[in-house]
Length: 324
Ligand SMILES: Nc1ncnc2c1ncn2[C@@H]1O[C@H](COP(=O)(O)OP(=O)(O)OP(=O)(O)O)[C@@H](O)[C@H]1O
Ligand SMILES: [Mg+2]
Image (tube, rainbow, N blue to C red):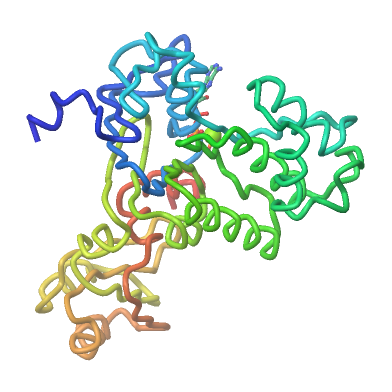
């Protein structure tokens, strides 16, 4: 690990070490380390305000860090800014299209900015590939959310970047539009040597697209790894018990064989979440142990990414549920 830390990240698509950033008295990033291999699709998860957009902005050279270093394809984001910019594409969290311009005009402008050759042909092909051919000459103000997102993606990819940053690429899209964006991303990755770093609030999206993830909370990486590895780390199945009264059930359940943890859910006075090895075999013993508290409902699940998220960034749930 020490050798990895001291490496300058030249072999990686994205490398960040000890990134720090504050805005006035707000600490947005408090020492972020990231390692994204070339060709990966890497997800950054975390509650509102965790530091995802700030991280993306630093990696995309739009913001300077206060401390730490970051490299994209081995290029330093501070001292080799313009080299980094040539290699990356970005889709912002906030929509960044001009309502009065058409789809074709947006792409044409971008092609000029990057001095791309065969401009008209490239733009035409990008519009077709994004499924926007028939709407190419309409002003964006008449586009649906999904069309706008596909246009932003087409623009971010027009100059064939090797690393694509997507800050909440499917925010506000319906299920079908989201599926279309996912499909387009898969096509783009399949058609070349592309690394994608995306932020998302959707566990489903992270599971569907990402090879590995980092969960951020309060400007720190609180967990990272593949989705499967993070789920495995939870150490078993999840049994959720809804009870009439809670009493001292945590202690009693903790004594059942195979139980790793018992957590009273912050959003409910009478719901406990038990992580237990081999859940289906232990279920009867758990129900026996909980019987004095009156079991109203029980469920058994394989761990999901949401369970992982709750474990590492559960504070966000307490905040919203008022710490019940
Ligand atoms: N330009 C800015 N000025 C002041 N504070 C900022 C600025 N940008 C970000 N912050 C603060 O930094 C912290 C991290 O913000 P950031 O936008 O990176 O979070 P995020 O994880 O992207 O959140 P979200 O999920 O809501 O998009 C927050 O506390 C935010 O209020
Ligand atoms: Mg953000």
